[in-house]
Length: 216
Image 1: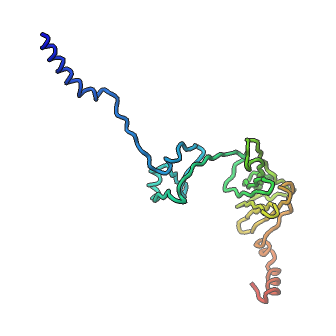
Image 2 (image 1 turned 30 degrees about the horizontal axis):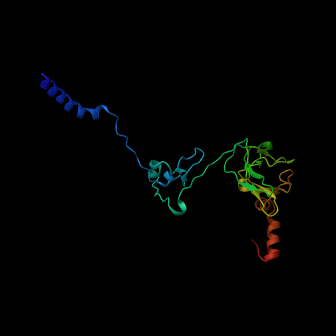
């Protein structure tokens, strides 16, 4: 009887051994990422690595669809970065930016100034900031603001700290204003070459002929 029980037990054991793999834990498959991004570690959600055209470098499918040949070596190698974003209280598109020697940042903000003009936003406390104590405000408040603009630009002269505001007006030309006191006051806008030439062509012909001996 004991021999019979031992034989039955052996048969049961032989049946259970192959089946143990079916009911046990599945083997964990470890995928090894050999891309340069793997060396960076955890990537902050405020940092975006991308190719030209806004193609997400971390999305291999998008890179493949864009027919981009990956070259992430040498000067193209990604490095760890922690991006931070700070609101300025208004939206804009394609802003041009300048910085004065007082570490004030100036940027254009289309349509957010007085009478629908381009605002000149001054931000303080953003350069080498040690805390979130910063402020942004529009400083473009002339008596007669330029009300419209097809394409605004802001430039800061790095030698004089003069802030220059350009507003293009399609075929009419361009107006230029400037401030020499960190945006606290603005000079009356200048109307540039094209609109003046359209209004006074004889003046330009006379001036060119007098200086160069020929008409334009």
